[in-house]
Length: 594
Image 1 (cartoon, one colour):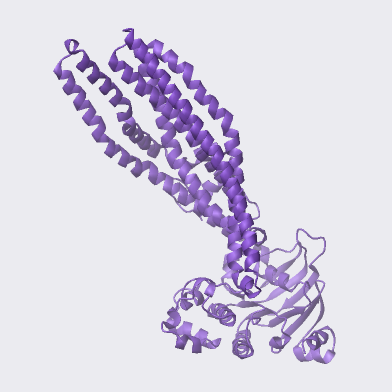
Image 2 (cartoon, one colour):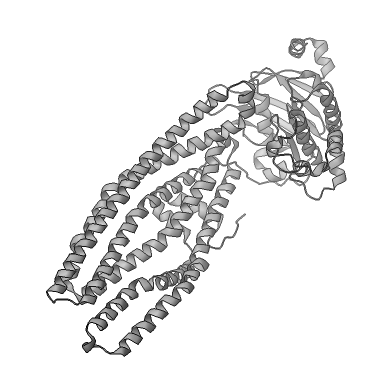
C-alpha cells in the first residue's frame, strides 16, 4: 500500500534508489520530483533572504562617495539609499521564515520518507536477510544516515544557490564598473578551485572509512549490551571492555585521520582566502591612489571580492558534508536495493483457515550448504491434530517450523494449507490466523497488557487477566501495584526467564489461532511453572492444529502424534505410548533424558 507524503510516495522513493544505482546526485534530484512549485517558492525566498548581502555593499559605497565628494551629490541621495537599505534588511526576517515554511518543511518530509522507506523495506525483506545483518548497522542507517542526508539537503541547495548567485552578482557588478578589477578576480579565484580538486579525493576516502568504523562499532555496542548478563555471569567484563576499547580505538583513529584532513582543508582555505583578500585590498587601493576608481569603489570591490572568496571557501567547507551525505545515500541504498524480499503472491485468499497441513516431498537446504536439511519430507496433519517434532540437533525440526511460518520456502515440493499451496496464499491473512511461541522470548518495554495484546485489538482487561491466569501468572499480577498495567522494562527485564516465556505463551493464546507453533516453549520454565503452562498448552491443543518442537520429551506426552526426525526425514511416528512400547528411536532419546 502506498503511503502519501508531501513530496512523494514510499514506493517512488525505493524506485528512485533502484533506478539511479551508483548515481547519488540523480537520487537527490529524484527527492524533489513533483515538488516544482515548492522549489519555486523556496528559491524566491532564498533570493530575498540573500538580497541584503548584495545590495548593502552598493549602499555603503554610495554613502562613502556622497560623504567624500559632496560637490557631486545631494542629501536626497542619502535618503534614497537609507530607504532602500531599510526595506532590503527588514524583509529578511520574512523571507527567512518563508524558507522554513517551504524548503525546510520539504526536507523534513524527505527525511521522514527515507526512514519510512527503510522501515517498510525491512518489514518486506526475508528472514534470511535479517539473520545475516546486525541490527546495530540497521539502526545506524535509519537514524544516522538519514540525518546526514537531511543535513545535506537542508544545507546543500540553499548554500549552493546562495554561493552561485553571490558569485554571479559580484562578478557582474564588478565587471560593469571596472573591467580591470574583474581581470584580477579571474586571475585569483581559480586557485581556490584548484584546492578543491586536490583535496576532495582524500576527504571522500576518509569519510567512507570513518562511516564504516562507526557502523561496525555501533553493531558491537548493541551486541555488548545484549550480552551483559552472559558477560557478567562468566566474569568476562574485562574481555568485553578490551574488545570494545579496540573497536573504539579504530573509530578514534579513523576520526582523527578525518579531523586532520578536514583541519588541513579548512586551514588551507582560510590562508588562501586571507591572502586573496589582502591582494585585492592593495590592488584596489593602488587603483584609487592613481585616481582610476573612487574610495567607495575600493570598499565595494573589497566586499564583493570577499563574497566571492567566502562563497568558494563555503563550497570547500561544504564538500566534507556533501561527501558524508553521499556516503549515507550509498549506505541506505544497500537496504533499499536489497532483493531478498519475502515472496507474497496473494493469489488465493484465506478468510477462514481450518488447519489441515500437508508437507509434500519437501526439500530444503541452506544457501551456504551442500547438505539438505530436509530431504523428500512428507507429512499430513489433519485439522485440530497436535504434532511434536523430536530428534537430534540438525535433524530439521526448526527448519520445518520456519517453513510452516513462511520465513523460508522449500526448494522442492510444496506445503499445502487447507489443500492450497502456501506459495499462493496472502501471508498476512495466513499469519493473522496462527500464533507462534518462539524459543527466545521477545518482549518490549511496555506494560504486561501491551505485551500480551500485541497485534490484537478490542481486548478487555478481564480477557487479559484470564489468559494470564491460564499460564500461571495471576499470582504475579496480583502482587503488582499496577497489575496488568505494570511496565516491564526493556526486553521484559523486570521478569524472570520463565515469566517472560509465559507472557509470550499468553500472547499466543489470546489470539485464539487456528494453528499454534511452539518452538521449545517450555525450555525456560521450572517444574512448577511448566505444569501450569503445560495444562494451558494441552487445553489449547484441543482447539486448533498444534506443532511443537521439544527437547524435553516429558512435555509432549499428551500430543496426538510424535514425529521423530533424522537427517531431514521421518524415521518414526506415533503417539507417546506407541513409541515407548516400540522401543525405537524415540525410546532411545527418552532414555537419554532419564
